[in-house]
Length: 309
Length: 257
Image (cartoon, rainbow over all chains, first blue to last red; front, side, top):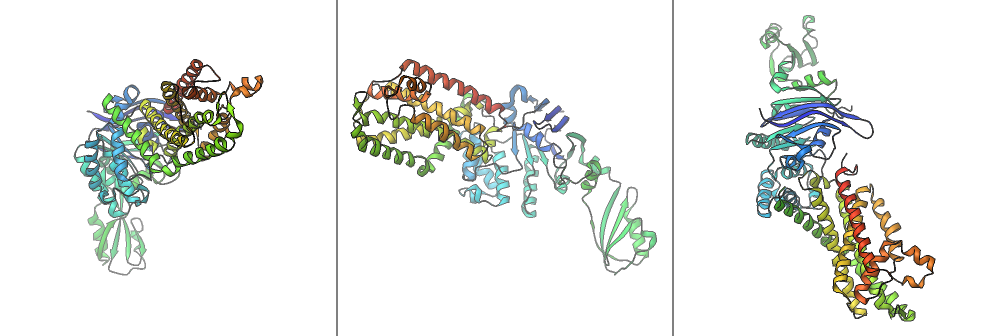
């Protein structure tokens, strides 16, 4: 099996004594769409920082497509495209200048750089703004500009650190579609996000970091199988003030026309519907209440992804 | 990275640097022209006529080389310190650091940007000086080599300053409290033969004195110091600052955690 990324015993202790990573063993298969999750301060950004050379590791080994960063970091870097959490482009430059310059830093000749710049600015729908100052772009456009910049050298591994933070739902979904497409075309993607719905929708494998250690590294499907309870929200036609007492362990009233019901592992939705029918309660619509991944995440690290450490 | 790719990376950074300082020409090219014009008018024409001769030359002729080199020093230093610190402060330097561009290429390109601005400003100031005096060139090789070496050295100085700087105040401290006094006391406006032996010896600890005198030698063929020693010293400083800059690019906490 070939790995896009493999870390062995990766550790980082900052000068202030904080142990951000404590011997992290992480492997991401080539072609994967991998979610790297964890609460704030868990060590996700440190991992990305080490990969992009902005953070110097204390110890351990990192290989990108088999290239050890200690023996040939420039080659390893040429495989990587990084979309950081914070905007880090020159706000006085235009998208055209930013993307072309980035291509130049990877040794791409001017003609190819111009072709790819147009290709990615169009794909990410910022071509119309190519001559505007980057500082004048909207938040969503700035995010897409950073994705275009990370792709201009056509990396084999794309790392996205909270790429959809602060982006409205429409743009977020179009970005998901775009990322799915480039993953289908063969680019390995590592994604960190606080939107667990995003990870659940996009990623095939998942790693959860907490306190600098990997607490879970498995496929999304296997992880979700661990769930033994799902909660559904039911909009009902009737108006209810109370529920039968025997329903207390699986149902709650949110308001007079909304119910929450828990379906445990091994239980069927039909059982719930049978009980509702017997009570002459008619269901108008039903939806999954909580993000399933979020339930697991909270169970593993004791907090939601956006919580402070 | 193969050599051709490195060349592309180098030219990309250099073009970006030149585009930056020419885009804001009102801040980078006009001020040195105006301040030097004032120096020529006040110190050269108005006061210079009363001073008479300095080391056997009209004061204006004596003054011109120092003022040109002073402009080159300031321009090359300011270009690198402001550009690199600006990129660090705005985090756009990360674009370069995450790329496979070797640190050596990054450093050489930033230095080249500083040297380009330094030489351009030097040419502008030289052009202005022609309004006030006829320039005689004693050795074009000395002029060319000293101006380039000096611009390289102060570009490196600006680079080190930018890496250590945490705020814009830190960027202003060195030019104000180090460069300006050293330049003014570095024989731009006077010959150190005017000073007592004690102050002459103190002055000889000032590296800018050697650069100014060697540059003046290129125009007038006179110098207060040994030309050979000047070259040795400038090259020595360049070597030291070059090694420091490369080390800081790889290890500085100002750039990498």
